[in-house]
Image 1 (cartoon, rainbow, N blue to C red):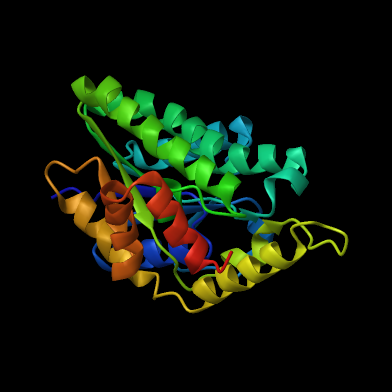
Image 2: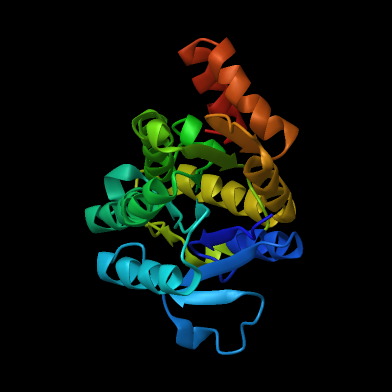
Length: 269
């Protein structure tokens, strides 16, 4: 069987790196991306390409380099993303736009860059890494939830638009995993004179605890491998703790107000 070529955005650390290392052990040829190659002079887990998902010039250059070398691309994993927390009222709008640029527009730029090659091949798989947070509006994470929800819904449309070309698309929504996402996340400062001071401060503490106490990201890698090996990938996949996945089921089961009360209780609001 011909070796599959995989491109993972945000592959230098966290979930992306775990996915890349695992797929490499399974015989895939893996390329990861990072915004700045000079920060990783000793990275040798797999090949890294310099690419910023917010910059189409870097995307086109990196994709062209990969195709010139390999002649094909079998799997694109849109993993690059940023976190953002804060009261929506107090979150600078430029930070909201930055989050959408990376988490929503970035994957769309990537998909547009690889579709011509996949269409030419009459084959290809796109896996968009979203989030369980994208299934619900979470307090003080509303913008993050919105970026991931937008990608989930857009993927549903893209699946139908590209199915006749032999291209498959799917979403994989992780829960909380132990990565360094909190270090690179934008969070609105807790202001002393803010009406949200106590509620936001307490919620931010809970969010950080959930991430630091998260599961091993290799679980996401295992799920990605299963999706790649599936003959007909589903529209949506979830990976995380039982309660995180169960929260999506509860949202379908409960009334809107009952579910809202459940979230308020969880965040002690």
